[in-house]
Image 1 (cartoon, one colour):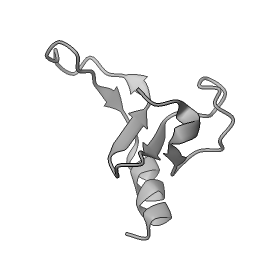
Image 2 (cartoon, rainbow, N blue to C red):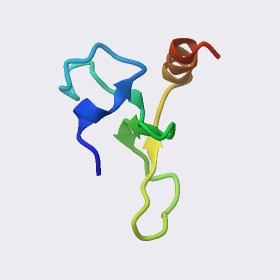
Image 3 (cartoon, helix red, strand yellow):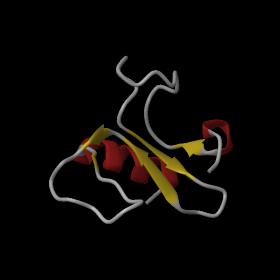
Length: 69
């Protein structure tokens, strides 16, 4: 797993303190995949090793704008 500093933050204010208006966030990895930080969701049970987070549409739109999409 990468350190957060190795990821490109696409959303949020960058202070790294979830719970202080720093979540949810979208990050891009060096390989071009995405990491999402947000509130844990219990919408359904995931397979072992997986998890669900909820992320508002506005946060995804912010990430898309940061990527120029």
